[in-house]
Image (cartoon, rainbow, N blue to C red; front, side, top):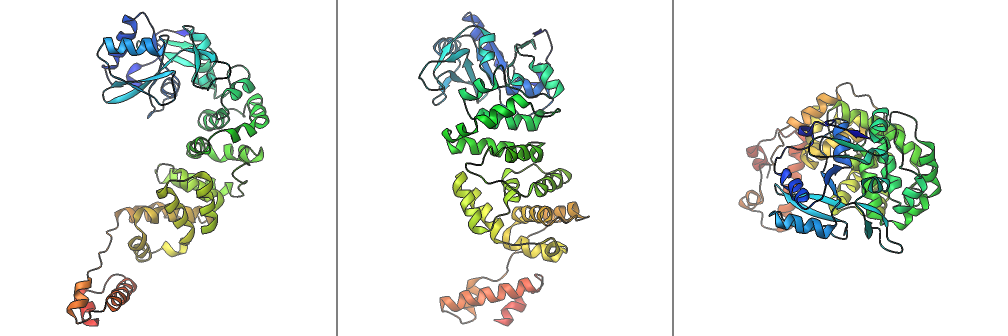
Length: 404
């Protein structure tokens, strides 16, 4: 399907320099188009997407065309079908059209083609196989625009064939279903995902984890995770959660507070782990050091909604653990304990605007009072700090020095 002047390109790109890339390809006798998420999300009115492009030049021909026009290129790891082209200090991924995988080769080792329809047939979902040129003309080979408008998420051709090309497409299907669906889940796609779910075991756990994290911050995550759990899609590394209701409450709280979704919070509320369970999940999913620290601290440090009803109680928590940790724990606790805090947004705003107290006594103050033993200095500071906290931070420096 060809739709002339269909896309408002000002919503897709904000730089005129990208025309240099299009001119470079066209000067070499080739064609280049935007494809995938950038086109799909622009049509859906979304923002914040990465720009991906496709060309009927081979990678070597594309590199030569860029070089001849003064454009710098960079390799993109093992993706030998793609080249990174630097425009405005950004790396744009440009893939050469492909018609299939070479037999007994890696997924990234392709047979190249100049047939745009053949390239589209090897993409995963119909909504991801829509192309656009620099003039806003749309090339839609599998009715992706119609599916996008109707909220239908389905594979191109045989769902099983598309999944077998890359088993991670199982997770991508559920992610895009959660973002774009307006209809019940496509049964052919779901049955293929269930039948081939063991193929996910052959995928590096980091890739599966990253897709899960992306899924967790999508709009219809609760219903989508329910389908995933009911069909045991992730059973090989994550158990079924019994707390989907808490996930729904958390997503609503976050939306009402106008915060961005946080995949780690949502994973935590799904499993509500103790500290050892949190460590286990962190190990299975190979969290970063920072992710592990946050996840385990949420499990170790308890806070109930009743503990944060007063500004004084919140300030003590903020002093000990910081603003962001306090916000996270408030959201998690309200979702977990099913507390409908009427003033939750006011509480969160109060945390954001709080001025964190600074303990006014230092070790040298203790030394000046005639205490020189290191252990006694530390113990004295700890006792004074606790007295200061218990006074709601009202004890003055002079009063504490007198206590010493």
